[in-house]
Image 1 (cartoon, rainbow, N blue to C red):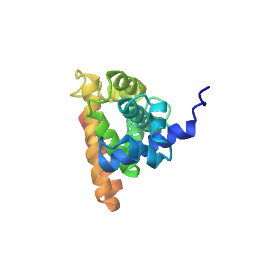
Image 2 (image 1 turned 120 degrees about the horizontal axis):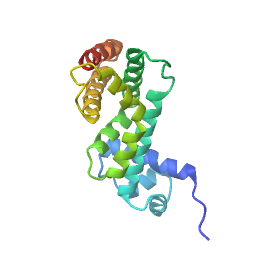
Image 3 (image 1 turned 180 degrees about the vertical axis):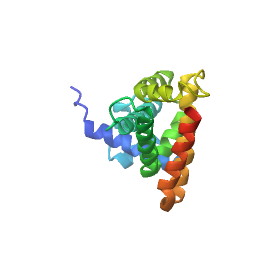
Image 4 (image 1 turned 90 degrees about the vertical axis):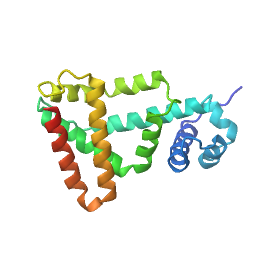
Length: 188
């Protein structure tokens, strides 16, 4: 009879994968992931059938963490600017506070290892954030642009702003403010 799977071991494998991909890139060896997680090498494949499945799980885990961060304490009501500001500040600060996770998410986002199913799940999970971007852009120059395009423009602006926040922490709040104002004007 097979032993029940441990959520702690699964989480240790995900955390070790995140750390090693941040350090070494997507070529990080599963044997090294297992060693860092403190589990036998075969356990990686007990929890994730293939390395690709493991990378997809990390991608979804990081996307979910980011989505939950930007959604937490979202201001109620219909003040689109206030809500977009909350999303912006939460997103940029998550990236600045989690540079390794941000680096891994960036690598996975462009990797052919990430399945369309995982990308679709992440896109659907971000539905309320994307709806907010659509509301913000409803009357601006991007009103007829596909929502995925609008989201990608915002994401690129978040990445640039976060890079500057990380490089110059003393000016992080100023960069966050500049970035938000630029995006707000571009959308509205």
